[in-house]
Image (cartoon, rainbow, N blue to C red; front, side):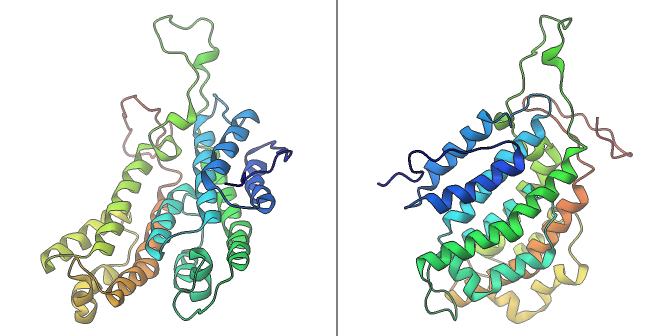
Length: 305
């Protein structure tokens, strides 16, 4: 396989924003796209450039997680379902800073989806490989990088400064090693975002898989209230049950192409925008915790400690 990053390509990475933009340069220079090779090298370059600051590991973890999403986008997706799942992850890693309409606009536009998949989709009958790559790069530059920037703006002031490892007078029995950002369990090192991510992931998967009984659909509708942080409209959450044609296409776990299309379309039109609003609402209220430590939250004031 041809090397994804040609020899002699030096990466000058001075900060989180520069590090994220560097992946676009790598993609342009590559003669073939080997996502895992690019991903590994870019993470190493971030570390070499000092992104993994031990004093604010939450922002470092956010940078690494965003880098993974960026590489995924430039690589492309195997199906629209896979893209929707990527969008659900994006909701968390941008802290809900993209416009709600972006999720439905990108996942419902035939030429855009064709470019994301690298093959014809919907009414688009042809999608040249180079055009698909250019469209994906355009989405990254125009939409995703600014959203990553906005996510950092929301998260940066809530990022806890950790200096225990610099304390010469600390208790010798205490673990004073610097925190490894990439080893942290939760997105942004915030358990609340980990919980929200898990609920959203399950809700999206269940919708796309379908429901065996109407009772399961009703129970799912209730779960979506929590997964969306109550940001989904009340009428929207009842529509899958009361709109009989829609309900018929959501029931059944062996969907036809038409049923699969309708489920995915409902997800990008209603579910993901609500998830996006949930992440935005939670953005400045979640408490930061390092992996392996018990979470003890203070209720009532939404404080970051």
